[in-house]
Structure formats: structure tokens, C-alpha cells
Image (cartoon, rainbow, N blue to C red; front, side, top):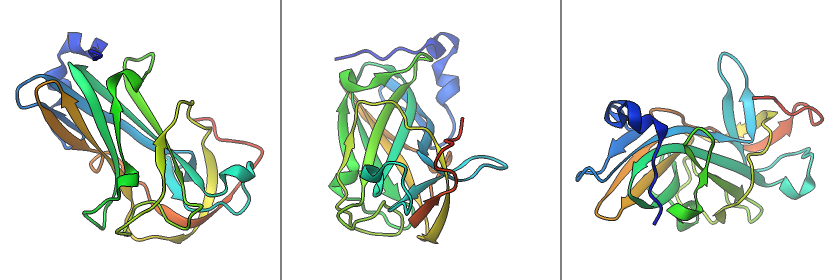
Length: 206
């Protein structure tokens, strides 16, 4: 089991993580966590802030193998004796989620970043005709944590926007307890049935 320790613990993790649904602590004090960011490889707007997007298909992909793929990146901070993390993608318009959007990641498989945070990367592939979770109840996309760096963010124009959007939910499992946090207060990502890359040659530098 891997003990997750952040530099932030030295300045008081309890205060850092207190407050909203994107942060929380185990009831017995055995761990704390905070969702730092949820993003994808696509952005539908850049101002006033970047609006990330999920694309069920891309009409002009720079890599044809990724025509039906959206990379989803979850970054979070954690401290304590963490055994594993359950990572889910959930839709805002439904309380259900498919097992394909629910992965348990042992602590030793989490990517540790230079800033002390942790990162999980998923690849959502809708080639089977299923879609990212938003208002849709059941899914069949295989979403698997992958060992790779985040893909460059690309500007897209989205068509046929699905009502709602998706967010991430993390269940932090310590040796003695568990607790759940989600990104709804931080970020909800809209989903489009189809996207067109605005500039295939120039990924955004974010």
C-alpha cells in the first residue's frame, strides 16, 4: 500500500480540503482528498475561461484512430494511508452510471505529479455507438485508465449538444474507511455528438 503525502500537508491539509463537494475527509481521519481538475483533450471555447468538451465523434481527426475517442484527465490531491481510488464519470441528468465508467485504481498505479498531486487518465471510446455520460442512462464505452501523458488540448466546434454534461466522482478508500467527493462544484463538461477541429495543425498551449 502506498502512503500518499503532499507538501500541502505541512501547511494544514484540513483547512485546504474543507468546504465543498470537491473535497472531503474520511470519517475516522485516515485520509483527505480534493479534486483539483477535470479536463479533456478538446475545448469548445477559450474565453473567459477554457471550456473543455467531450466529443462522441470528430469529423476531421488529426489521428483517424481517435475519431471516436475523448481523453479524460482527472487530477486530485490526497493525503493519508490511501489504499485505492474508485474513479467514476457520471452524467448530470441521471443518477445511474455504467460499470464501464467506474474503475478502481490501486494507489501504486496512480501517477504522481511534480506538484505532489495525483492523476488518472481515461480514454473514452464511442466507436461502439455509445456516448459519454450526460443525460444518457446506460453506457457501453470501455473506459480504461491508461499510462500516458495528457494529450494536447485542441479547439473544436461542437454540434448536437447533449443536455447536461458529465463530472467525475472519486471514492477514496483507506485501510479503515472510505469517502466520496465529486467535481460538480468545480467543473461539469458538456458533451457533443459531433465535433470539428478548428485548427488541426496547431494544438492549444494550455
